[in-house]
Image 1 (tube, rainbow, N blue to C red):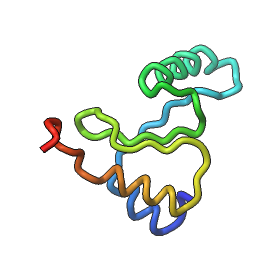
Image 2: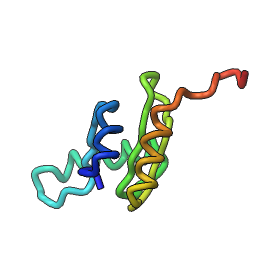
Image 3: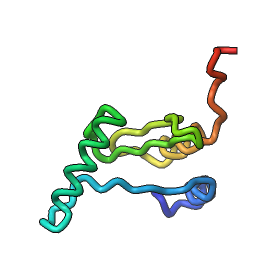
Length: 90
């Protein structure tokens, strides 16, 4: 899905961060447990895969839980590029 040209084009607008929570090796076990707690605290879910788009202000703009198809993923990426609504509702 990520290799699709339409997805690649949208991904150029993003900065990536990965939060590893489920690696099986003992070297990463403690850090991954810490990351899992961070994910649960920040995003109120332990679901994997979890894709979240945060704006420059750190606020969540879009979220996609679980597996998705290409059209769903493209819509998720487009939603993340939209300006957030004004804070006061105007």
